[in-house]
Length: 338
Ligand SMILES: Cc1cc2nc3c(=O)[nH]c(=O)nc-3n(C[C@H](O)[C@H](O)[C@H](O)COP(=O)(O)OP(=O)(O)OC[C@H]3O[C@@H](n4cnc5c(N)ncnc54)[C@H](O)[C@@H]3O)c2cc1C
Image (cartoon, rainbow, N blue to C red; front, top):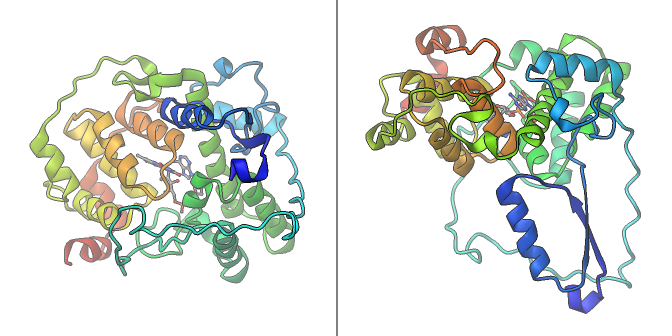
C-alpha cells in the first residue's frame, strides 16, 4: 500500500504502555521515510483540558479526579468526519483475511453470550441506537448495571471503545442529546460516570508507567503472593469451591466477556482469597477479553488486588455477592449446567 500510493504521513492514536509502543516501533521500522504523527484520542477529558499541569498530579482517589474534572473540564465537541477520497483517486481492493487465513480455527458463537459482538463503527452506532433510543434502556442503566444475564443490563459498548471503533466523546454527546430529547436522570449520568472511570485508569497508567504491571503495583505494597499451578487450572476451568466464581469463569472462557460484577468477584477471589499473584489473573483476562483495554484491565486488577487505587481495600464475600446479585441461581444455572 505504502509504495503504491506514495504515503508520506500516518496519523494514529498515541499509546504509551510498553507492548503497545513495541508494536508501534516495529511498524515504524518497516515503513521507510513515512512520517508518523500520534495524538491522544481515546479520552473523554482530553489531556490538554484536565485541571492538572502534569500527569503526575493525577489524584490517587477516583472521586477527587472525577469531581475536579466535572467542574473544570469541558468535553470537547465532535469534529465532522472528512469526506472520503473519491473512488477514482483511491481504489481499495483489500481483502480482509478470515480466521482460517490467519491460521485460526473457525468457531461457533455461544448462544448464551451476553455480548454477541460484531466489529466496526456501524455496529457500535447500531448498539447505541438500540440501547439508547429504541429500548431506552439507558434510562434505567443505574438500576440494571449490576446484572449478569443477557444483552440489556449494561451498554456493552466496551469492545468498540477498546478497539477505537467509537470514542467516549461520541457516546458522551449522544447521552447529552438523549438527556435533552428523552430524559435526564441518575442513570443517564451514570453512564458518563463510568466513562470517567475509564479515563481515570488511563491517567493512572500515564502517571505510573510500568508500575501498573508490577507485583507491588502503584502502592509499592509488599503483600503475600503465591503461584500455584493447580489453583490456576481450577480457577480458569471453573472448578473452584465457589460456584459464583466458576459460573463467571465459564462465561469468560466461552464468550470473552464477563459482567463488571463478575470481574470484581473473580479478581477478588483470585488475589485476596487465594492470595495468588494478581498479575497471572490479569494476564489471563488479557488473553480472553473481547474488550481488553490495557489501562482498564490492569488498573481494575490492581484496584481489586490491594495494590492500586481502592482507598478501602475491599475484599468481596463471594457467597453474599452471589446471594445478592444471583438470588435464584439463574446466572449460575446458565453457566454451570451446560
Ligand atoms: C478485573 C477487571 C478487569 C476489567 N478489564 C477491562 C478491560 O480490559 N476492558 C474494559 O473495557 N473494561 C474492563 N473492566 C471494566 C468493566 O468491567 C467493563 O468495562 C464493563 O464490564 C464492560 O461492559 P459494558 O460496556 O456493558 O459496561 P457499562 O456498564 O455499560 O459501562 C460503560 C462503559 O464505561 C466503562 N467502564 C465501566 N466500568 C468501568 C471500570 N470499572 N473501569 C474502567 N472503565 C469502565 C467501559 O468503557 C464501559 O464500556 C474491568 C473490570 C474489572 C473489575
